[in-house]
Amino acid sequence: MAEIIRESTLTCPECGHTRTETMPTDACQYFYECEACHRLLRPRPGDCCVFCSYGSVPCPPIQQGQECG
Image (cartoon, rainbow, N blue to C red; front, side, top):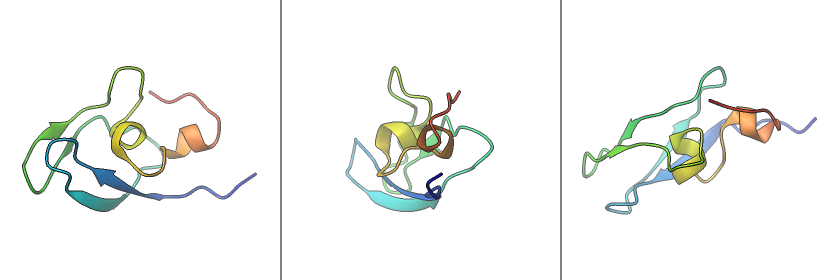
């Protein structure tokens, strides 16, 4: 089994600001507020969390081939 990557860089679709965050391993993160423009990010349709929608790395459950959300 491959090692799980726990950090993902989120990119705000509104202003382009990026920030690297540590992803939770036991839950999906549905909301994330951009620290630059304060837009509240939500997953895009079909994605389980903000990391899968706006992150450089998908969330841990998706990395493991499991369902999330």
